[in-house]
Image (cartoon, rainbow, N blue to C red):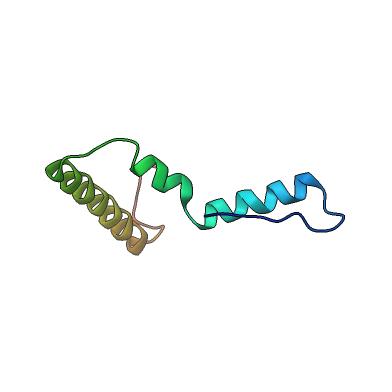
Amino acid sequence: MAEVTLHEGETLENALRRFKKKVLQENIIGEVKRHSFYLKPGQKLRVKQALARKRNRKKVRREAGGDAGGPRAQ
């Protein structure tokens, strides 16, 4: 649980900034989104596989380098 105590002489804006940073580090928003709806086990598997395919395509593209002869290469 993200918790921030207000230091002596600290502005509320600075404390809020620290709180937001802590929430991002603990991935609280992601957990809330993940638990906001139910996925059947099969659907969860399909989503996981789709993310893995996307990761692999990105990895192959990155390993190919910038001179892969894409639409912008001349």
